[in-house]
Image (tube, one colour):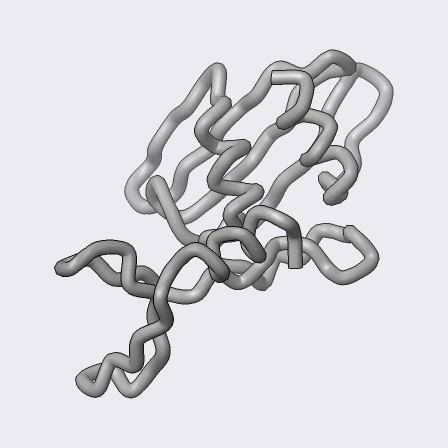
Length: 121
């Protein structure tokens, strides 16, 4: 799990929602949040099976360009060696793709890439 998902989990009280029969995080007296499911494997590789990964949330907040088509979103972040291009559900949730793209390269984002981008911005 990335450091931002860890911090988020530690910061908020865990609460069992009897109605949905699942654990959630209590954000405020009236606000609850699903557990994040990190977008990165223990080796730092990107994992499409994620939900509200806090590193990806931070990267989406840096977008230089955003477009929305029904429930699908795309966000682009200018980085020192090209672009970070992300596709995701609405304005939240799962980030389906996160790619580093430049003139001569296209590859999946890694956790090290994500941390570097966040440090640069």
